[in-house]
Image 1 (spheres, rainbow, N blue to C red):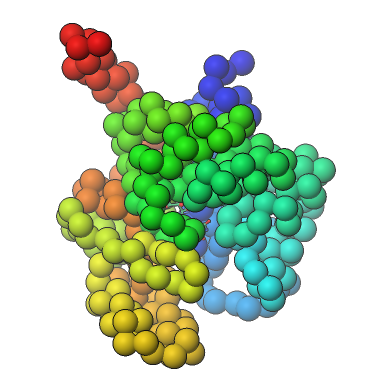
Image 2: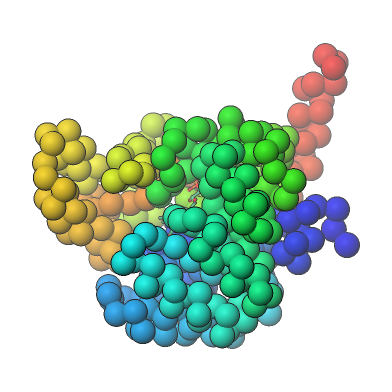
Length: 333
Ligand SMILES: Cc1cc2nc3c(=O)[nH]c(=O)nc-3n(C[C@H](O)[C@H](O)[C@H](O)COP(=O)(O)O)c2cc1C
C-alpha cells in the first residue's frame, strides 16, 4: 500500500496526473503517461480531426478513444468531463453515460458544479476528481462527495476559474480546507515544481502544458515549437465570459484583447473565438494566428521529449532536488 493518498486512491506509482487538454491529450499521450506510472487523462476532442456538435457522435468518439487507450495499456487512466452550463450539459450527459458504460476507472470533472454528476459516477464505481480554483469550491466539492480535489492556480494553461489565486497561495488554502486528497496544478513542469507543490500541502500534481510539448501529444508540431521558443512572460491571461484563460502570447491574443477592450459585442467576440480556436492551432497548425492554451511554465519548457521520459525524469530528479533542498536549509533550521 502506498503512503501517498493519491497513489493509493488511483492505484498508480507516481502522484503525477497528466491534465486533460482539448484536442491535445489523446490515447497515445494518456497511455504513455499511465504506462510510465502516472495517470493520463483523455481530453475533449483529442484524437479527432474535425469539430462536431452532434451529441451521439461526441459520445461515440470518446468511446472509441477509451477503447484505443485500453489497447495500448492495462494501467489506470482518466477521462475528462467538462460539465458546462445550460444547453451545453447535453454533451457532458453523454460523456458521463459512456464513462459508466465503459467502466472507466477515473473521471476528472471540470467547469461546473460537483453536485451535477458526482453521485452518479460514484454509484457506478468511478473515482471522481473535481477541479476547483478556490478553497470555498474545494469545500463544496468535498461536501458533494468527490474523492479528491484538483486546485488550479492562475499560472495554469487553459480555462481556470474566476480568480487570480496562484498555485503558491491556493494550494495551502485548499489543503487546509479539506480532508480529502489534494492535487495541485498550474505552472508545474519539473521535479522542483512537484516538491514545491507537495511542500504546500498537495498529495499529487496536475500537469498540462509540460505534457502538451511531448512526442505523444496531438498538438501540431508548430505549436510545440512555439512553446519551446517561448521565454519568460510568454503567456497572458485573457477574460473569457465569466472565466479567465491563459494562452501563449501571439497575434490571436493581441487581437482578442483589443477586441475585448474596445467593448465589441458578445457575438463578435464569440465569432472571433470560433474562427481562431484551438482546432485551428492544435490541428491545423496556425500557431501564430489561433488560440494556444498554455501555462506560465512555458518558459521552463525547452524540449519535446517522450511523455514517459517526463514522468521518469521527474521521478529520478526528485531525490537529488530534495537532497539539495535539505542541504540548503539544514544550517538554518
Ligand atoms: C492546451 C490545453 C488545453 C486544455 N483543455 C482543457 C480541457 O479540455 N478541460 C479541462 O478541464 N482543462 C483543460 N486545460 C487545463 C488543464 O487541464 C490544466 O488545468 C492545466 O494545463 C494545468 O496547468 P499547466 O498547463 O500550467 O500545467 C487545458 C490546458 C491546456 C494547456
